[in-house]
Length: 475
Image (cartoon, rainbow, N blue to C red; front, side):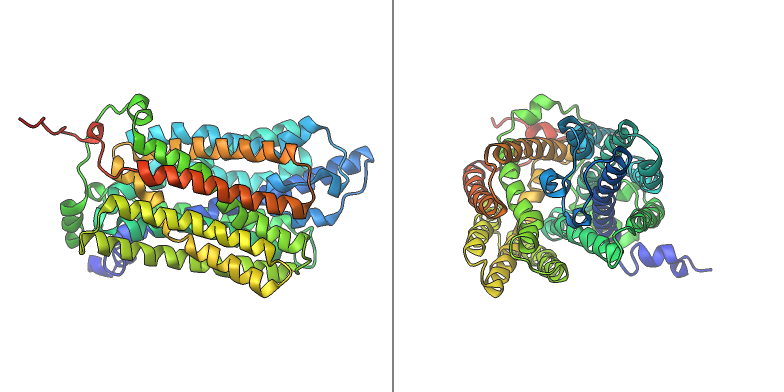
């Protein structure tokens, strides 16, 4: 049989270029990871129910299943009588594992490649999804939390491996649109995960096991597709077409076995611009994905079905605007010779400050649901250029340390933003409405400060320590 008739060849090059297949599977991995992570929120609910029932504590309210994020749990609202230590273990086990695993995963991905690291991490996370429903019912808190920390560590491979794959497969002329699409899927994945959970709980909140098994099946499908279709680079791919391989050979940057140290990364101003920028962005994305949708339901009494549509549809548009922004950026930089540095800076500024401005306006027009929804949608759509500019900027600086550089940006940006949020939450014991207002202004302030810093310090030149053959000094 002609090899061109085989399904593998139809997928790898003859219908879709292999670099597009890589980006699609990285995006699929983000959806699966979000689903497998968010399902554990329901697991906490079930575990808490079991603890309360066994210890004859206050009655559990099924409204708990409406929570959108583990950090949003309100113990007083649910009348749950658990110790503060127990509660903190329940809420932070997964994020702790995810935080501490990213940098080691980035180092391994850069040194040994992504093929097996990504596959093993996702396979273990999928296995956890299969066994966790049984553990929640049968096992004690310590073991459940240990497994959740471990699950967080296995999922920490997602971003570093995605970054390394983009570095090895996506050439500079397509970096903004393909990289932008890949990273833009993550917020949409949050919405998809919530939608699947709502469908599973529709009519009966005790259908919680279905979500675990659904995302476990999705994880199995991903593992099979990834293991069969994706390789570390075009050089080792056995089924890539000759035309695509030639194109990538001519457009991809040069790679080499270079000893890049943390000192190199920490001393680079461009990396720090991205770390500080990530801190500001985390508050913006939290408002979009968590706070605004939750306050629509909790404060304004909007039905959950309408909240789901209000949240999901704009993020479909967010992916579209990310791709459109990427096409414009790639075309402007490669064809019209726009300055790459200022293109990245201006696109990032637009995607940080303008959305937060509309989120602030949305709070003050909250009594008019049409105006609130309009402002929220505009804010989400204006954020699209973030993925096509800021999120791929580290690949301009380094390709040999693509994994660990993004891991560092995520780690420090996420941890600092999380600590700030927790401190604000503890200091300001306010109502939902007042907290919503404070968070919108805090996000706007942080986005403005962090993006202004990025506007004047961002860099796009490849670092000298990333080059296989450093340029000779001018004579």
